[in-house]
Image (cartoon, rainbow, N blue to C red; front, side):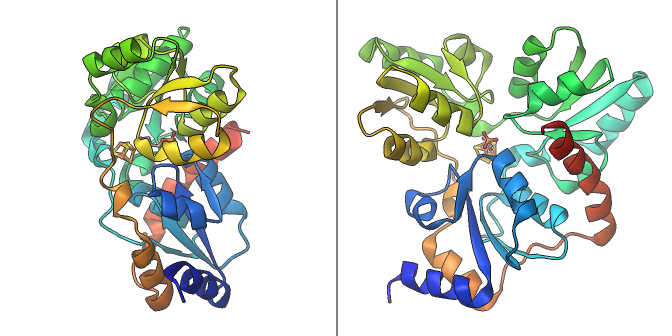
Length: 301
Ligand code: 13P
Ligand code: SF4
């Protein structure tokens, strides 16, 4: 049997389902039951009937799936796959902001640990942040941790007062403007599609800004046939699969999230066989950090 055949057989035997983020390796997206952005994956995880979820993403994703489904087993192919941004905010700063501002909503990008979520009022992803911030009754918004997504949301919601944190995604932040300019010079007819985690300079040169699923949808629906994509290269698989006649370019230094790439078919097979790498969240932490996640799911409807 091939690795894929073994995985499929074990999935049936163990009543398991595979969820994968668009940044996972192509062969994983190919065999996954559900592939999507972080909002789609957390929403999907809630409605599943299967007892076991194999989550091919990074730790905040597996952790959120477990918090939202405490009765289920959530397995991660590699428990060390982590998102550095998830650790960039701190509880002490949240406490200080709450003392300083009345009417404060702490808006927590889902790319954060459960401990940070626990001290927040609502979670957001890049797919729903604008909608959710607009819907909040609060005027003062402390947006943690991503400064780039926060600035992008603040521009869309000028009626609110934003307090920014200084977190960032190293993969998106390190994309160089001169490399984007070179790609534009090489492909002058291409539209630039960017994730809001990119720097201000890159976003200023973009034709469309959105989550990974937003970028994929835009490329499919738009009449252009050439795009420069400013996000992690994992999205290429879906972009090319859905749009065989279109061309997708990345900056010369291709943005790669090494943590997402820690997920492999062999590791999926291993956790399905052994039940190792189950995500565990302390019961009280799970209960309190579920509230902002539930609020996100309700407000994003
Ligand atoms: P999406 O919410 O667009 O899936 O982005 C997740 C992420 O980690 C981006 O770096
Ligand atoms: Fe985190 Fe950036 Fe990787 Fe997304 S791409 S998981 S934000 S390090």
